[in-house]
Amino acid sequence: MRRTSSTVLLMICILGCTRSGSAVAEPVGPARPSSEPSSTAAVASTPAPAAPAPEERDLAFVPDLQAIGKAYKAWGRVDDELRWAPFLCRMPLPGRPAFSVAATGGHAQKLYSLFAKDREAYAKRGAQAAGQVLVKESFVAERVEGQQPSPLTVGDQGIGGGDHFHPYVVRDGATYRAGTPMGLYIMMKKAGADTDAGWVYGTLAADGSVTSAGKVASCMGCHRDAPVDRLFGVKTAGY
Image 1 (cartoon, one colour):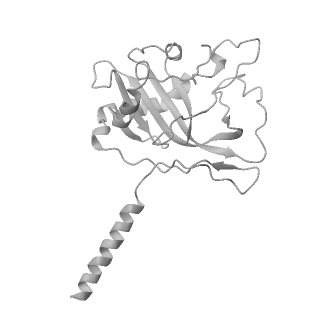
Image 2: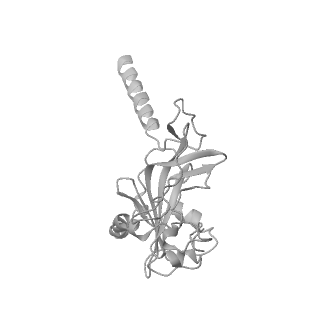
Image 3: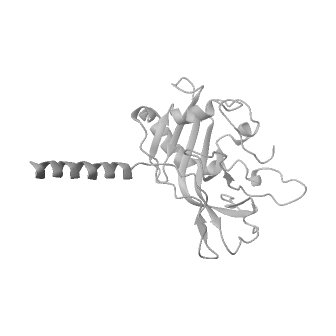
């Protein structure tokens, strides 16, 4: 009888350790300094997002989100000046990453770059029409140690075709690079659907799989505090 009780107790302890070790948490700690010069160190090692609850993955929107994940690069970044007339006779600048202002949660410790299907409508910062789609690329923020990035080349400054993106940003005197892709955050404006004031939310993992879709509670809880039409707005070229 004693041997059986001990075996049961041991199995319970093992099961408890396994479950606690699989919990997913968003890190919010400071960057870990790199011990190697002329290298990059991630600000935080962000684990893969937990699987969403069934009610946060509306299968009706999955095909749309998958199509968006394949097409959005052609729309252009909202801050890429190649699509706008440059100011003061200078060269047009490429898009750059921006730090999330979130201190905790899924958006913390990441760099972003924003795309809009209708870039001009988004830049006007008003209510958006049905059909508008916004995509935020997210990256691990890697602090650059040692040798700093070279000045922008002519190609980086918007000359030539393709995507124009300079993946470096400076904050508090330190340089960071948009490192490992962390997936996409998507908002699409739909007419006649079960939405949040017209908006449908979705997230795609770095491998392109749809991890949430529809009226996602975590997205709605934040965007309902936005100043205009569930949008917070970012700096755009030409406006």
